[in-house]
Image (cartoon, rainbow, N blue to C red; front, top):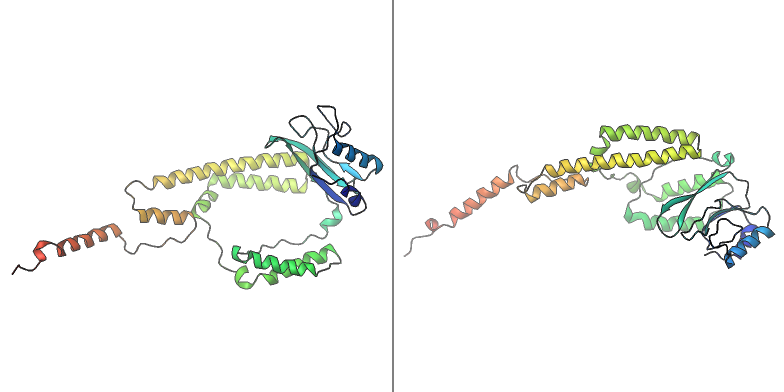
Length: 290
């Protein structure tokens, strides 16, 4: 919960984003089923009245709690004119409703954009690299955003040694490779990329809604493709399939290198060895009794 004394510290600083469950309800802040106000709500309203145009509540008057109170907020401090979009999500995951918000940053920020880079860090090296980056940042001062972006990438590349950065990549599992090559999956992936490109060029609320709807469709199609793969996978085995073959198939599905059998027909070779042992240990092979 917010310590409301911190609002006055934020008001004297840089533009800030404040969001979360503030447990503050007041009839001036939006829908309130009880028509009452609590102490936090009074503090928040008092701050807004004494500091005009400092704090801007982005979400509308809709209630964010099952009891009809508005308790959850997304607020801009010291930059109330920034373009934004905000809405209450009606999907219930707790006794609170989620609040979704978008803030359009000024174009000046985009001029500092840099090309993306992908760096691979194995799990066992994460702690070491995190400590090295923290130590670097403690003694670092940047004069601009562009300089900071350039320096942090350089530091990451220098901390991630050649062995880690260019090491052997995990093999894509046979299952993922199979359903990614599925015609229906490829078709809807192309549609999703096209709609995503449209939203990136024109980030309107309508285009975002279309993008979200298409994302759900992509998940449904890939789910069906996975189900089809697993059905085919299970049908390739039955109760007579040796455990070694089952293990080999599972390793292939997981993307691991499956060890090839030591003998092309392990079952046949096993039966031959058992017969040889039976013959060698029979009574006929024992020496004559003296």
